[in-house]
Length: 368
Image (tube, rainbow, N blue to C red; front, side):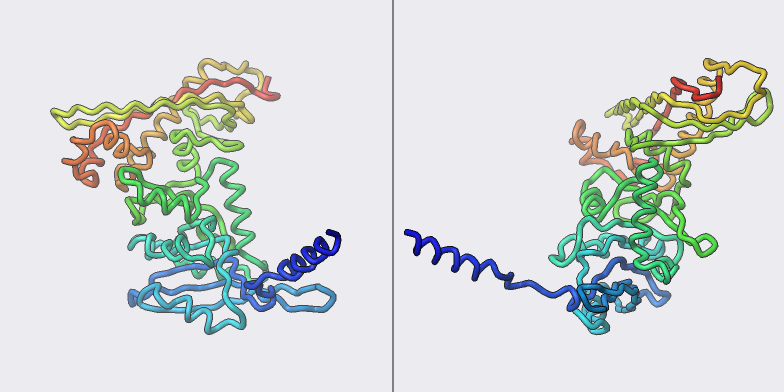
């Protein structure tokens, strides 16, 4: 019995000694970021930022960045060109960031996402970002920061936690694009004095970038209207009090959002009401320290200002034909016969969306 047990252990060790498809790390070219742009000639230009690992002995490695470029009439074959210009097999599974230039995004991003969504050597968790201008300029910037994609990733994660941008990746964007009656918003970045900065969100109609963007402040308010509050959210609206500008900063602690959609099948009129109730903590306020803080009046003034800003955001959504609230999806579920008759791209711009923001101050810190 004992000899039989030892034979089993020996056989197991043989099969567990290694993996048949194992590939040494030094034999791979690890991509940590990739960008796609539309050239003036209508071709697709890809820029891959990969990691070069050089063994220094004793299990230690030096890490350096390398830029590899490829260009073709379509995405087909781009990966072959990239592979031919690198020393090892290209591994896209570690590509943290997928940058898409705004001109290419206007043509549609589904073609760009397809190989990353379906490819066995890709990652569906890669962050999707639209860039102001050429994406290549972003992926090629700050060459001394190695690897740059980790820096952009941290920038994204911080902005998501502060409720400035949505948390989008290849999988979530792909899924939403294929969902009829609901559009997406995607993080938007730019170069400012040679620094990569978040500039808000890009508004999409289907799989195409509309060309319209929201600022960080507008994006933050939109996320609240979408009932998407992350770890924190800080806003600093300028209030008009007695014909004077009053500056205030506060953080949203709790929110309750309700959206009601009414459809008149006879007239075809569609009305969506969005009630947003938020509880906030005031951080700073510009006022005469000898005056008491009038909470009730301040609640009304902030509510009025945020409702005004919310209407401006809605106007931009309608202009961009971006149904980020999923009003079309709701109609398709509740009024399927009417939905079949509608051309939603034409009908959406006629939808009446009425936002109302109600603010309640629950804490004032050291202001009292």
